[in-house]
Length: 183
Length: 351
Ligand code: SF4
Image 1 (tube, rainbow over the protein chains, first blue to last red):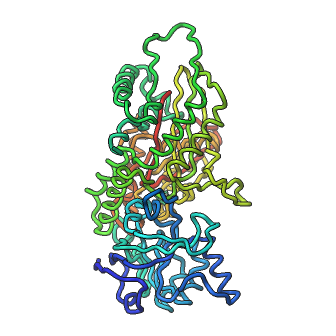
Image 2: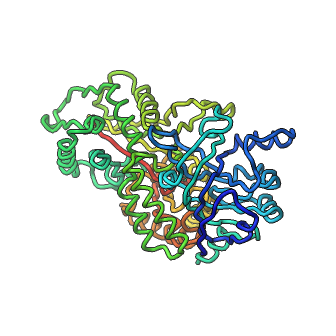
Image 3: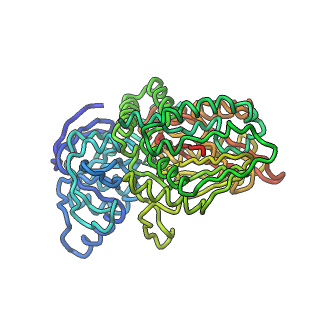
């Protein structure tokens, strides 16, 4: 379990260095998107239209925060189950997405795209939403405000704690970690 | 300030007060606990001076009038119920129950995986932050599930159901809690105020109204399962089904989890008992030694799966396995598993 601090956007060599089980603290801008937003992004790509955000080197966080209370940059903001984004993720990875943050294991299709194009899947602690929100210093809705908690926001994070759950080499801590501790 | 406020809220000590059905007969008689509860409540009522919401939650004691032969109805205003439900909705989401937190702390000591330890550490830190800053423990503040025990000598002035929904509406709005309810499952339009609540009410003897607010997130609820086993499958079939459910759920219900198991009853009663089982105090022992043993065995086997915190591998997959059994038909053996994540939220108030 190596530990790294990394800046976003991620460079290809950042992704290459990471192995399943590593702990990473992310600093920089990341984007939020859940299923509804993913569907829209993929539809835009299919229609050849411009996206509301860059993808190259970027990290998407699967989160639908609770409403922002006065005086705070964001409400509680822990990860949601990533599997719901599996049908859409490969297309975004193909367009340069280099990191995803969520919870739960990814499908074979996503893993294949991660290996081919160089992308890493991070797990954030599900249900540690208040703690994670403290590592988000600014948030701005940049697309689909009508989707509420499902809109796309740009988050500025500082030392946002994640664990490499699945790396670009097929390493998978869900599979290997569970095997290691099963008896 | 936040801390001081917190203490005044009555938490759902489910072992003593859960609206459990199945095992009711086997449990010690409720009357025996009455004096103790009265003492605790009046002490809490005294402390409740400052907080408006808490004062409303503090139970009014009928102690002055020892159970008369034909007691007059106790009148409770619907407005008061709405206030209490609003308060409980917020407290449940901000203030992790002590029994759950203790179980997580115990888990930290038992966990061997470095990644698992790191995660459990984050979960504990998260609970402290949520409490101090009055922020939701988890952003998924859930469906608002409300259990109601209505004493048959209570008269609610106004609509009970509307009052509960009004409370949820207000609690979820004032507390900046996420609104996750769709008005229709297929047309999928958000109701924008987290109503309607899922209300489970039953009428019990007495002149007390008890309300539990149980916010339930989608991640864990989605991994719940039910099966109508054959009687021949027996206890082995039940064990197999529970272990399979936990295995399939893997990381998705945010382990460490609490596993609620319903056995027996009818189809819907079995599912309901699985949910009620989640309200029992974590760490409490089942009053029936047969089920206490079965719980211990399942707890060990679930943790031997190695799923670990967040499914990343480790010793602590479950904090507890709770079983609620109910009488059932000669031809049936229903079993249901309702998962709860480590953010196992519930708060109770008595009126
Ligand atoms: S399963 Fe529980 S802890 Fe995990 S995201 Fe859902 S509500 Fe939060």
